[in-house]
Image (cartoon, rainbow, N blue to C red; front, side):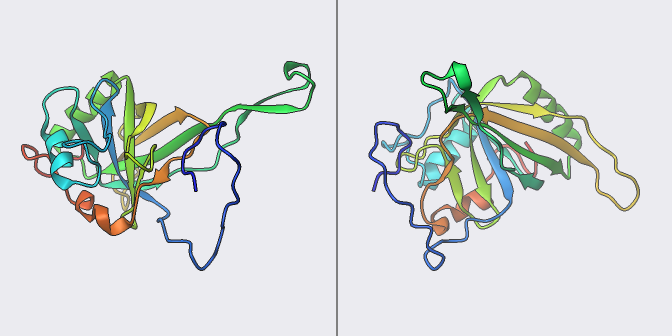
Length: 209
């Protein structure tokens, strides 16, 4: 069974079996982001997505290979979206044609330290990034199910720090957006990636970004 997203692939029947479907989670709790100019996971030695040491090396890097952790995320949601569609005279022979699929992840970062304010300000300078997400069930979602390559060409937008009043924790909202027909995919069994629930940069303690 092919797990790619290519129009050259033969069509196959989705199983959609209730008894076999795992619980992937329903909320994003961590996002891992990297510059597009950094080295992606590709399954080779030192670049294997399931190896904790390879993640730790990327997280501790001090160049474009660095993977940044966005953690302590509340309301990490990925709502359904409608594809961009052309129709009528814009399509040879009429009918409708799906062009692409805009996608968005929204959330709020909680528990910011004084240092975190400056680190989140740098998000505005990031430009195009690739990313991976970890769900509340410990599943890692990536772009390529085989290599674990990250979702490419995304934009992370930092919004303004929000004070919601007494009885509500202050939060910093953000929006992560990208555009692709292919879905993110769970890379493999969730217990392989339990280390991503707690992994940190060696020179940063408790920082949100």
